[in-house]
Each structure stands twice: as C-alpha cells, then as structure tokens.
Amino acid sequence: MDLSDRQHKIIDIVKNQAPITGEQIAEHLKVTRATLRPDLAILTMSGFLEARPRVGYFYTGQTSETILSEEIAKLKVKNFHSSPVVITENASAYRAVCEMFVEDVGSLFVVNDDGLLAGVLSRKDLLRTAIGSQDMNQVPVSVIMSRMPNIAYCKHTDTVLDVALLLITKEIDAVPVVRPKANGFEVIGRMTKTNITKAFVSLANNGNLKK
Image (tube, rainbow, N blue to C red; front, side):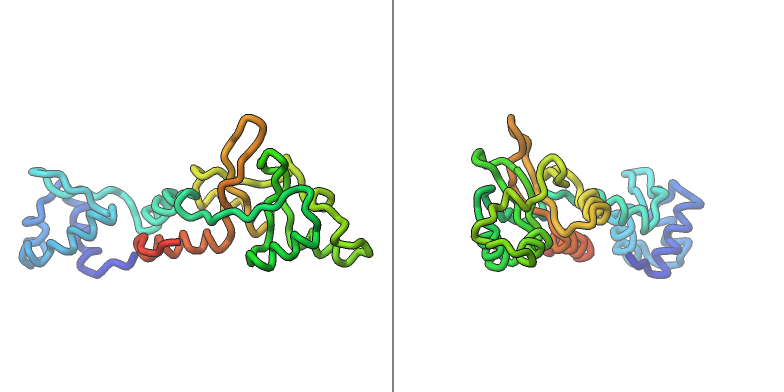
C-alpha cells in the first residue's frame, strides 16, 4: 500500500522513540492529536504499528512487502474454488468434448464408479484423439486421460499461493480440489488460473470481490 509523507514520518518517529504516545507524535509533527488519528488508525490496522493501551505505539518491523506477503499467505482454496466439472470413465471422448464446450472449461475431472477421482482429461488429450483416425464416439475417456496417481491436486485447506506454484511447476491450467476418502479422493471443486486471479484481486480490493 502507498503511504503518505506524514505516515512515513510517523513510522520513523515510532521506530526511533517507541514506546511513544499519540500526543508525543503529534508534538513532533506540530499537529493536533485529532489530525493524526486517521493516520495512526491506518498504520495500526495495516500492521505497521502496534498500539498498547496506556503505553503507546511500537513499530512492528514490518514493511509493505512483508505485510502483503502475509496477507497472500492467508488466502485459502476453500474461499475461492469453483464447482467441479466431472465425467465418468466410461464416457466417450465425443461426450467429453461436448461437456468441455458446454461448461467452458479447459479440463474435466474423471471419476470412477464410486465417484472418486480417477483421472484428468485436458484439451490436449482430446485434440490428440481428434487428430487420429479413431471414432471419438468409440473411444472411452479412460483410454486417453491422465491417471492417478500422476495427477496434481489440492485440498480446500491449502493456500492459493501453493496452488499457484503448483500450476506453474506442472504447467497446467487447473487442479481438482479433493477431500480424502477411504479408497481415494472425492472431487469437491476446482482451482484454475482464473480463481487465483480472483483471489489476488480480492486482496487488492480488501476482500470486497466475491467469487
């Protein structure tokens, strides 16, 4: 966040003279305590300063960069994931293409007869099948999908930052959000690059953007 010149001066004063009261800070700046009240409130709520009753203000040692990093680390998958788009293993590649276009997604999560994650189907998988000479109505999804356990996934308690790093490392566009079950993983959501963008925008907007 951008601080005003006066707010920077307040931080410098507190750094050098903490603990220091609001009245003493006002004297240094030759302004009234009431004039400083909004600045002190902003600096305290933003984490630059700590206010202790009957003691005064202390500098927390944080910078704008460290505060931003801490806020990013607090963003959780459970607050930003989308509904999953799933398809069964025995569905045809043709049906998968239709599902992908209707839902406007770049990948489908494939589940087995127990409703547990079995694989992931991407646009590239379908494109390779379409280029070949096979009839897409006769090719089951299970033949062309990427299978467990070679699938990247996340849990709803993971951080958005961890998922962003996972997408970059694996060079993929989305991962399923899963819940552990006795025999595998239940798909409860999806995290995409768009979800991650929304999370970071919501942080910039002080959490006012909803998914």
